[in-house]
Length: 357
Image (tube, rainbow, N blue to C red; front, side):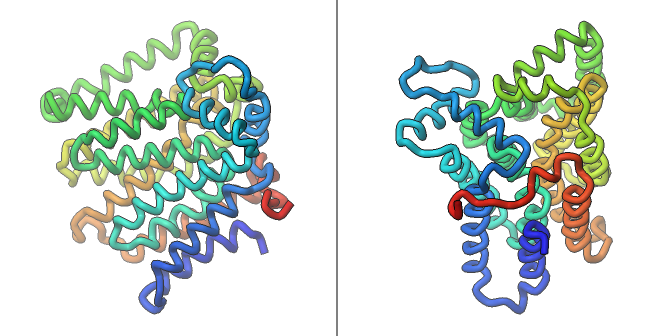
């Protein structure tokens, strides 16, 4: 049987029968350790893994430090080189950090296994294997959303700083949201200026996108990072963008429902930013679906945030029965479609593990 489908079924079964299962916390810990070993120590599996592997190979311990916005990731690679460790050890560390953060957020929910069962098929086994570094920054972005759900916190600034040092796309996305939340905190712009926010932002984006397109693409590719610019520039078209947009479409409607009933300014601010982000990546896709798809990876963090907020709504709003089951099955079906029909699905097979080489 397919290893990815088998692994995805495990948390789903545990979640479904959890009332009849003892020692759920020990099982949760065991599953976390298994995922760290399975995803973290995968051996040259995933389309972006080869790129990151070669970048790690290029790092020279005795060369002059390379200063960049992604200095944190470069420093990590240099440190692992000094310790004479392989890229796979670095990959395992980033996977460990990502999963620990996600399991921490899950542990704070009443239904701990739901979020794990939801995330395993697509987020852990597709995104986690696709690119470890971006898997880490997406999870950090989810933590950023989680910390700022009710109020803007100092912890979120630390998350902003750490994530920005790992991947440039993180700061491009998170810094504007952080500034937006600051404006909500100190100037209450949600109530005062809500009707002006989206039109102004949209106008700015339209002007920038359709003025000197080639310059924009080259600049955007540079912002994404010295590594990703190489392979993004090779192909400006990606089927993945359209597949992900179809996948995330229901959550745009759910976000609109939350916006209507949730009156917390910070939650509403995050949702406004989410709507703007979806629209911006759509405009960006007119220039490069590949580039737009790289940013759309962060929609996974928004998806988890939206689902968590949705189940906080009053029962009279959440009327559909077995909605959690529907969400999990929806993710399972998407993973099966992806593994069978996506152009890059062959990068997941055959599965190999560094510890078994």
